[in-house]
Amino acid sequence: MSHNNQQSSDGRHDDDTALTEFLASLMDYTPTIPDELVEHYLAKSGFHCPDVRLTRLVAVATQKFVAEVASDALQQCKARQSAVVKDKRDRQQKDKRLILTMEDLSKALRESGVNVKHQEYFADSPSTGIDPASREE
Image 1 (cartoon, rainbow, N blue to C red):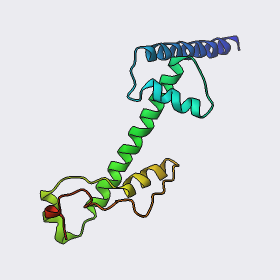
Image 2 (image 1 turned 90 degrees about the vertical axis):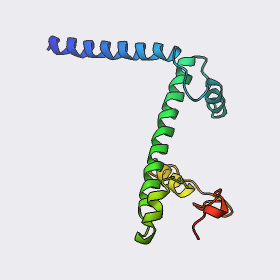
Image 3 (image 1 turned 30 degrees about the vertical axis):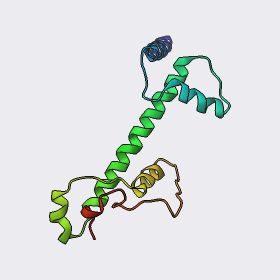
């Protein structure tokens, strides 16, 4: 029995060491999301902590979330654009630009538990912002 307790405490020690090393590595890491922005939103939600490591941990988690949502939105965009009717496939092969729409982003966010509603006037057409001469009619 005492042997199992020692394994358990060794495992906990390893976890504590890994956590300590990870938190120390955050001091040398510059996240994509600036500390000031994270601190602003943490303060806005009522959370105050002078430890920059915690701020950077939140920044890393946020960065990961945004990257996952962007990746999911890209997959939604590719799936939508691959569903083009057969007579337009020749044009699609020539024009390989991906056009991310609010619909793609909304679906990706919905999968993460975030519901987004946008105003009716919101420009969300795949041809929005494209030169009129190059639009498909």
